[in-house]
Image 1 (cartoon, one colour):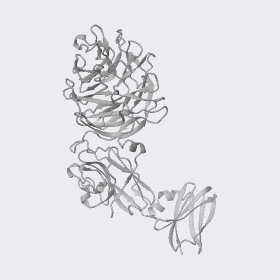
Image 2 (cartoon, one colour):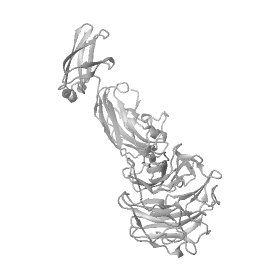
Image 3 (tube, one colour):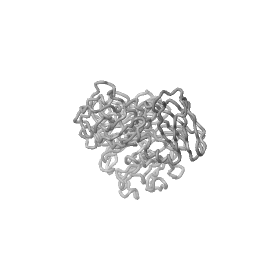
Image 4 (cartoon, helix red, strand yellow):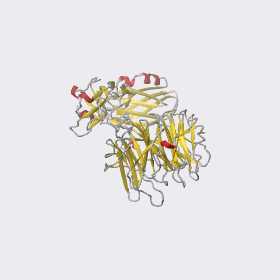
Length: 600
């Protein structure tokens, strides 16, 4: 039998983002986007929303999901009106901090919620009281230990740094002797221009320096990036570094987005930021934001939502040397990844529009064939016996596929025998069909039992994940692949019986027996050219449907009738029907009855 390709349902939104991102609705209430996004676990994400049409886009607004993005909520910190959010740093679904600045005066504050944003209160009221104070960053290594960073204060000028070791209740200043002096007295910090990895923290300055701590903020060092001086057109202030990100304690990237010359400059470090080297990268690097992927060495994701520097996302696995597009022509603002398979970005949307966030649905870092987390998934079907013209839906959850080799991913195989756990399923000779190669979360696999694809009979549906496969046919069909037995993981086969047209299970099953109590149908040939259908109904239905099928499943007659409560006799012309056996399906009053008749 010719092997057949099974269909899968994939949303149009997934297609538009190359099936790697799932769009989610965030209730901003205005035209805007998420400017800062942070993930605490696979279900919990917090963000800071910006108002794109305001004179200053900064707001007091936060957004949050605690169910993986199915539902997002939003709210306001409710701080005094002079404050707006500089950055947001959540601990978990309930606890979150924001640093807040005053755009009009020297000032700053940190606010905290412990009830998911329902109420916020200021912590560390002793901070940011100097004549040049400006709060840029709040960060916590864990629930107990945190830091804040602000613009330079004092004489000599040094960055304002505070630490807490009691869950934000009290704050102490970092000894100025442990903070480097400024490169230039005109320099300052930038809101949210920092990153952290493996216990280290780095923040960047307008004059191109990178500050670092490796001892929870007690002491700081700095290094020069070497970027050229950059003053954006229309401004008088330098901003030599636009973005900074680290994947681990050693590997990091800094970016200078030069809008004056329409160029992105990139530098990398392999020694934790002590030195920086120019990167002559290839591929598409988006200039909106970059983030490191925790648990990797030199893997990063870039995001863009700008007409000059592009819309989309891309990733690198070699510390910025090569960038591969994930998608393009899609707005992605702030970006954050928890690991190689869990990530979110913001999205620019107009007021009251759908969208606002994207959830990643793929894998970036290589998942090797020896990864213990690889799993073929758990498969279920909506019914193990599928009547003619009914639809089978196959759902698989919990899938994690290898990403090694040119051909890798997830598929559903259809076979005539149970192939559970077989690392060479094609070699059984029993595979008769399957899906294509699927990446990310598998959508449902659906099959209409109309006997045009698969004849009636018993089949087995089996989930399979694989890497290092080859595709000699070049069609991307799972049943044509050559699987590597050392990187093939086959799940448990699920039995399904595709029933034939007119199968007694579909005529006299429990559903029909139940409906006979409310609808009784008998048919007979009342003349050579006429069939009479007697319907005894317990309620009226002016849209009773009668279908007649021949034994090949072809519909040879259909019509609607008015049926009153009680006995009804419906004449059906039969002059065009050849002699033979037919099935009459009657749908009335919410009940369905199928009966058989032989025309002479």
